[in-house]
Amino acid sequence: MSEKLTAQIVAIGTELLLGNTVDTNSAYIAKELGKQGLAVESIAVEGDDEGRIVAALQKALAEATVVFTTGGLGPTIDDKTRSSVAAAVGRDLVFDEDLLAQIEARFAKFKRKMKPNNRTQAWIPADALPLENPVGTAPCFIVEEGNKALISLPGVPREMKYMLQNRVIPYLRKRYSLTQVLKTRTLHVVGMGESDIDARISNLEELENPIVGLGAHAGVVDIRITASADTMAEADKLIAEVEAEAREKLGAAIYGVDGETPADAVVRNLQASGNKTLYIVESGTAALMATRVAAADVGGTTFVGSQLGATLAHGQDLVPIVEQRVKATAANVAADFVCANVVTSEGKDVSYATAIWSKTDGLIISDHRDASANAAYVSSWGANGCMSRLLDHLRKTA
Image 1 (tube, rainbow, N blue to C red):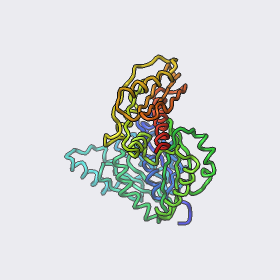
Image 2: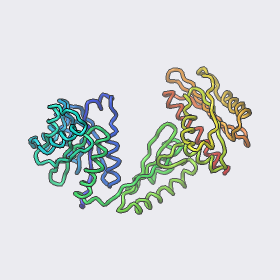
Image 3: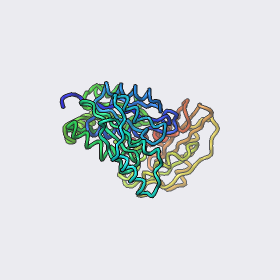
Image 4: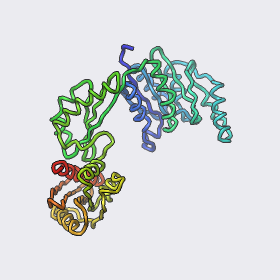
């Protein structure tokens, strides 16, 4: 089809608005649709209020080619999706005997008695395409309106994922002749702020394909490169060209890609440097850095141990303390590197200091910052900062 295909998602359930349940379904749907070249342009969350759901669906249908709902297909009174979809497209709800038989079969399989209210799940909008749900009791359906489709999926993540992969994506690929692919590669940067990165690669952020965007986390900034193409090979080529320019401008600040964490990169570089070893000293961090490095060192070749230091009073000069700790520890442990990360807090006033000691080069770096933030956030910031400095040293001495 020549027209641009877009999608919107309406996640349904008051529990999502109360914060009792995190909406992971929309993120999963958006990611999987992206792989098919179908861009999600909006995600909305609505409680169990039929009027608001109907308004949200009508708005989405006016703007997008494909609209998804997730949630609200259960048997209880507060499950409003079926009636809301019917009202949004001006259709009656009709009873589907085949769906009822499927629901009854699911209960029989598990030797459970079906409650009368489960019959409500066999009602769907008139002329909707029913989708059998073999992994749950909530049937799904698709309402077609001209070239548009409104697709209702369950709220249970396991069921939603199965139905999306096995029922919905094949339907979308066939109906809309989806041939484009969308691929994303994420570069991870440490030791450099988002604004600094933006100043260096702003020309890349102005591209239309691939699309380049930034996302900041605790001590890490992501550079997302998303390419649209007819084949994966073409998408890879587009991404590679942009990635090469980003690496040229940012250098060693890019520590890894996609799912790689700073701890993964540290372990990988220590191993590449002749299986160098690392010992970690922490205070006020709940052993955050040690936990991450230990998890990354699957083979147990680089991480040789850690210790938790005494909690320090806020307001102390942390730099000489953290320097003394790495020096003293290095004298008593057999490790090529000792990293220290110390955090103190009083209310929202947080200070942290990091230091690295090398068996061959002595004190590599020490750093101290004051912040007004959550202590757990700053612990992560300090851990990532410490690991980024170790990475920088490993690369320079490789």
